[in-house]
Image 1 (spheres, one colour):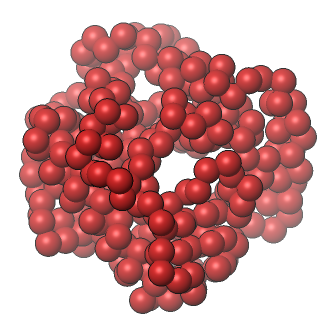
Image 2 (cartoon, rainbow, N blue to C red; image 1 turned 90 degrees about the vertical axis):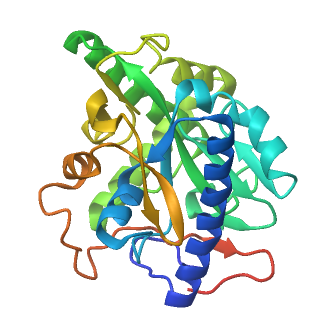
Length: 289
């Protein structure tokens, strides 16, 4: 498979990957409907619904958010509702998992980035799940939460991935990789479980109390992941591929925050961002780009 941001998928491989991810989301949606769990599409999945009526044709993952109180039930519910063919993973189930998200992975498949070449677990084809917290209304308190989350996320990633996937090219790519390698050595001073605990606690400053803002205060640009409450709730059901999914109340407003005013104009080829995995397997054979 390809190993960087300059590689592309074959159309057949990409669509096959998308359909596996879509099947996971349909199972997830059925579980959330059954147990009244509050989830909604995020990022490119929201954009895909409003611009394409489904997955963005060149996208290779599906992103959804779920409120923290419901996210915390996934360890119990996913094994019960999905069965042995799927696994839920996050930092509380696998301390070497490097992200501030969770995943439902299809067992027997593999979706391994080069940065996770030596991961202690097998990263399968997945649904990306972002735990959504109520965030402080007070601007200073909000900034404290954002700073803490930003630092702890980077510490966790570097503790588990000396060479994380970063969307840089040329000399900048090598400079950043060298800096990450040095930082990763320092991070070995911190136990994985401790870092994961700190990262889970960092966005929960309001302890679940409803406020005027909610979101996932991590990532490169945190402003793209924090929303006014009335942009998200009440949720709505909208068409997606051959079914329906939960969408925020104002998907256009949220998508404009994330992608800018020209969000309805597809980017030209060469500007469509994704990173082809180091290894991709559907369980029967290794896929080819």
